[in-house]
Image (cartoon, rainbow, N blue to C red):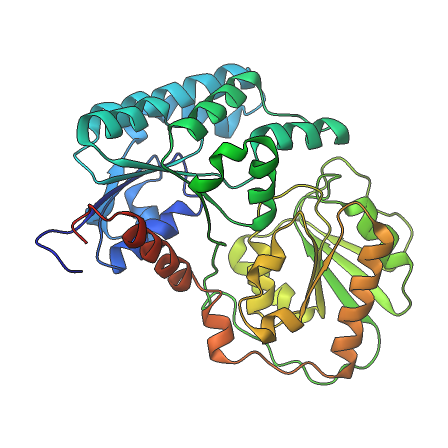
Length: 382
């Protein structure tokens, strides 16, 4: 980086999320990174974060972390408020001078104000889902648990305070444009990445026999599994494999075309991608599910809805050719997408080249983020 000193970027989260990957990649890009989290240092280092970047919040919130782990539903609203206030106070008290303060939306209001007022830092918030009011409306329509008023108020305040709002997909941008058009100039779209080493591409010869459609995630109405079942039943020679927990929709019983397996650690997912032919995600509301990048990197065609964010991963013609986006909430449209993907597999799907896969990587994600930091921070020493 040019200049007499490196740009200082403080990143504040609770657990790991995608911002640990962001911290690692910005460090590699030459930024001076401080990563504030209650993730233990050794665990953060296993994901590639240098020890020098780690700032522990665990001693401030250990009892709350234990409560969330062992009794997540006990006084959930009280735990939610207590955790938000505890981490916000901890980062506010320990924050060092920085040029940019990156935080999860709604989690760090006080600390964001400290960064802005005390150090003159820009505040960049990470919003992984649609505008909070749009998300609330969709979840209420589904009969799912909506965000609490506490969360809503903090989210809305964070949107106004932020200099930049970083989102993973265009449909999230559309929700902000609909709900708060005055925020449009703050938005920056940067789809999440994937660890290419953990999800290698599997050779896929010309396919004969039944095709396996894979879905990884919670078996829930929010994920559109009722529509996915309807779509699969419209097609011949297709079976569905689900890997994940059963949430709020019964799994089809007595139908051999539908197979369920319990959730597995992320490092075990690669073998399921290798055994599948098509990946499907019929979500009704989701910023950008990372399993989509994992599936594409593994060489699978992707069928998703415009509310899942997968269309934003079509960085190259080869990725676009194997990405099928259907209208959310429409089983017939999703069935057409599955049919097209299955046809592509049966005709013989050429592998992705290295350049296609590399654009899905966390490295590419970090370079896009770094470029935007440099582009918008003209007064930084970068």
